[in-house]
Length: 403
Ligand SMILES: *Cc1c(COP(=O)(O)O)cnc(C)c1O
Image 1 (spheres, helix red, strand yellow):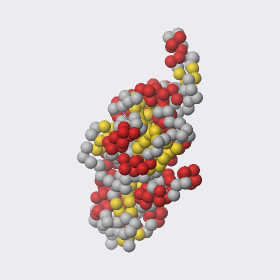
Image 2 (spheres, rainbow, N blue to C red):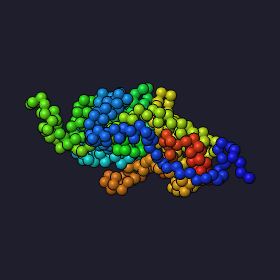
Image 3 (spheres, rainbow, N blue to C red):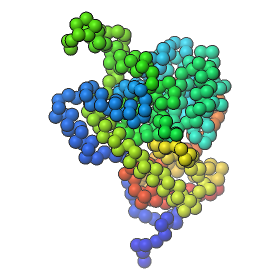
Image 4 (tube, protein in one colour):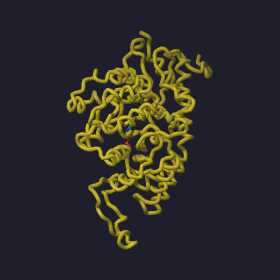
């Protein structure tokens, strides 16, 4: 005989109907739909007033002096490095525990990404992991605010200052994210935001350079659209719209107004959506304890009281010395239960390109190599209900066994 009521968190092994829980589902409502229709009706589809308004809204939100809209965070990182004058022979410190974009943008400029290990708790660069990677050729440090929690910036900024290095913040996971009211992306020389489909604020594809430096912002503005300067005409005539001058060989990185219109709505909803992800994160913690698997996994590091955590990711770690099955099998069995997961990240130094080009071996950056083996990114997004989280944890508890 079956009962409708029961324990809040069913016992491991207790069957419940399969749900379909994707790894990610963007939160899109009627306001986003309306904003897109308005742009379509206006017939101005590419970069225009919506993009300018989106830049101003982001600038005001994060508290930077400038914001330059582009079509990805990858483009934003590239433009920042270009504006800093990074070139062939230079080196940039990049965490190995990150996405492909961080390393490849250095290669665009024929610079070397010098990979550094990360803190075992936060997955972020620290002054201690950066220090051994510094070389005479080092020009900049690229910090990733992993998962949406602010990296420990003060010691890194201090180290950078003492060596005369620029600090670039990859804030692709980190909106809204701050410590003591200071937003991710505004601590260093310049920051990059991502509005990719899976990110906390999305325009499908999109990104932004944020900086207090007028030089970096001006250069990024010029180079995001073919290096074309429209100010040139004004110098001679004070008017005209057809005339431009090519100041440099730029890129095609501008954001569309269709995307910017979605971004304006998403930005308004950013804090409400963040609060929902925080709810999900807290629910995971309680459900994992209640399911009795607290000793088999390690929960993500909790933010301090003065921190706003974006909770872009919920990186769970298996305590591999105490639990079976393997990470890979756990992921497969979750998938069989309809639950999508991911892994953030496969360290750059384990990938063929980096091994081949720079002769990396896994043990060169041992913390990232070790932690990667046991990480599973669980679903976390505003539409995920408490019931969904309980289901995910119930299935996880049915899979994990103490060794
Ligand atoms: C997603 C991501 C990027 C790239 O963002 P795009 O907007 O897709 O170019 C860069 N860095 C990190 C850490 C990311 O997760």
